[in-house]
Image 1: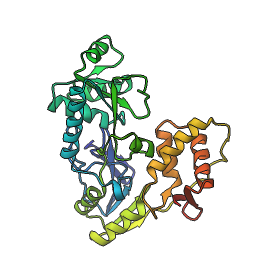
Image 2: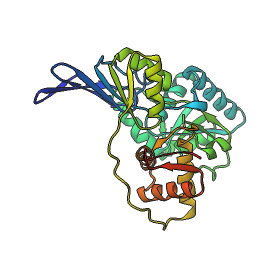
Image 3: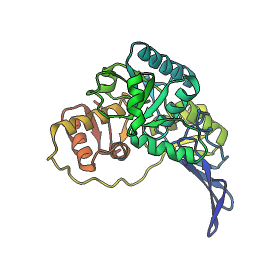
Length: 326
């Protein structure tokens, strides 16, 4: 970050995107103008990161993946206070507060929350421990215990601890654990489970709008997620022309139907957790990429989308190669 790479007549500089450790946005500098491209970003300071850097530009390409509609996020401090209060109440009731969240970014912020605001020990899933060690190696102070270590069991028996696990990790076999989800995109099953805290390491719509205003591009090109909504909001509320970035979308191969019913239902539930804003089209490519990044196999995602369409849960548009709620 902060260095420029010369490529022919262009220069490329990486800027901090503020999303997770190592996330960047790229500024492409030409003779008479510059362009900035960024995927996920966060435009507010968190306990473990600074807000995304702003590089004023002529054109900005921005991913439109953010909590929308009824999922407007509460203030970060308020959400974190609710998380800590719930955890302390659990400990008082002799239950182990357990938080299911994204292993990268959100999990590390939760570790810092409990390090800073409580004296509770923090136990993390081994996958989260490996990622957290990378944060520690890069100057982010975190204190935690790997759930796979010998000391973790003693801490659980003592009861004055919190546990952080990846989403979809099954803790039903542990009777003393009480589960909550920390995510800006809770699935229907997570909502039904009861305890959901809306907290994100990604910018919401208002943050993205503020980022655009400070970057002052002449044109904004959006892609992914709620790209049309973001383009319309920017056109109305910022002195910038907002457009949806159009590109050729390669059609996916027909799905393989040989999947077990439980896996298909789980994948369907995850997809419906992403497609929650009425009258908004979500690009097929974005939905597939999000699901695959969560560990679902590509053909399983294709079959889940096909089934949701056949059941009339989703409506597919060939014109946009996207899905919307029926």
